[in-house]
Amino acid sequence: MKVYAMNQLPFGSKHHALRKSTPTIALTVTFTLVLFTVFPLCYPLLGYPLYLLKSFSKSQISISSYVAVKYGSIYENESEQKCDIFTGEWIPNPHAPYYTNTTCWAIHEHQNCMKYGRPDTGFMKWRWRPDGCELPVFNPAQFLEIVRGKSMAFVGDSVGRNQMQSLICLLSRVEYPIDVSYTPDEHFKRWRYPSYNFTLATFWTPHLVKAEETDAYGPTHTGLFNLYLDEFDEGWTAQIEEFDYVIINAGHWFYRPSVYYENRQVVGCRFCLLENVTDLPMYFGYRKAFRTAFRALNSLENYKGITFLRTFAPSHFENGEWNKGGDCVRRRPFRSNETSLEGVNFELYMTQLEEFKLAEKEGKKRGLRFRLLDTTQAMLLRPDGHPSIYGHWPHENVTLYNDCVHWCLPGPIDTWNDFLLEMLKMEGVRSYEEKLDLSDRKMKLR
Image (cartoon, rainbow, N blue to C red; front, side, top):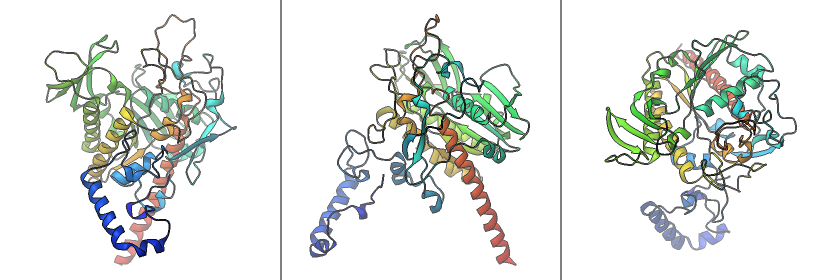
C-alpha cells in the first residue's frame, strides 16, 4: 500500500485551485500540523496514526509502511527499498508443496497435519507475492552454496524449531543432514550437511533469558515461571559465538504467568496471583527479555555473525481462547484488506521493532549486523495454516488443545525460508558492494 507523506496528501484535486487559495490552505495546513503534533490522532480500531491511512475507510495499511514512517526503513539503501518482500498477498501456487510428510522425516509430530488426517490440501498451495515484485521460491541448491562452510542457529521457542524443520525439509531435495548433537536433549539439536560443511542448530530458550519453572500447574494450568530479565540464558549465549547466522525469536510463552526479577529482586509479575506482587503487562517482560538477549549478542567478544530477528507470528484462535474451545478452521488465506494487526499482536510486534532498532544501533559500533526477518504481516493472513486438531490421532488418549500457534508442514511457514534465502542473497550483494567501495577508496589513495 502506498503511504502518503504529509506533503503528498491530496488536499485538492486541481493544482490551480491550490494556487488561488494558498494563504487559506497554508493556514489550514499549519493548524493541522500543530494539531497532529500536540494531539496525535489515531484510527480508533487499529491504533495507526491517521496520516498513514490511504483513506478513512477500513483499508489495510502495510505494517512495513508503518514501521518505515515511525522508525525509518528496515533497508540500508534505496535500491533495496524498491522491493519490500514483506508486504504483499498470498496467491495460488499449484506447484507446491515441494516436499511431503512422507519424503521428509524432520517434521515434528504435532505439525504433521497430513499424517494425522487433515482432509484438505489447499493450505499448502499458496505462495507469497510481494507488492510490485516477485519473491523466488526456495532454491535448496542455491541456499546450500551460500551457506557453504558456515553455521546457522535458531534461538527461541518451538515456532523457531518449526522453521528449522521446514528448512531441513526444503533442503532434503539436495541433501539430508547427519545428527551431530552433543546431547540427547531434543531441545538442543545440531545437524551437519557434510557435502557443504554447513551446520544447523537449534537452541531452546522460549523466554530468551534465564528462567525457571516454579510451578508446573500455575494459575492458568500452563506453569508459573521466574524470569530473570537482566540475566543471560547461558544455555545458548555460552555457545552462540561460533555461529555465522543467528535467527532469534520469542513470543507465545510470554502469555504464561511469570514472576519478573531484576537484580535478583522481584519487580512485578504477569498474572501470577501472588500477594503483594504488582501485576505488570506482558510487554514489560517481553521488552526486557529482548533487550537482554540483544545485549548478550552485542557483548560477546568473538561473535561476528549476522543476527536475524524473526518477528512475531500471530495465532488465529476464533470462537474462544486457546483453552476455551478456540479453534482455527478457516480454509483459505485472508486478503490484506480483510484483517489487521491490532491489540496484543500489534503491541508485541512494535515492542520487537523498538528493541531491534536499539540493538542494531549498538551493534553497528562493533560492526555487527542485525536484520529484520519480518514474517508478521504474511502470517497474519494465514489462519488456514495451523494444525488445529490434526497433530495427533483422534483416538489417542492425550490432552492437547487445538493448535492455532504452530504451522503445518508443508505449509505457509515454508515461506519464511523463501524470505531467509532472499535476505542471504542480499547480504552477498552488500558484501560485493562493500568490497568494490573499499577497492575504489584504495585506488583514490594511490
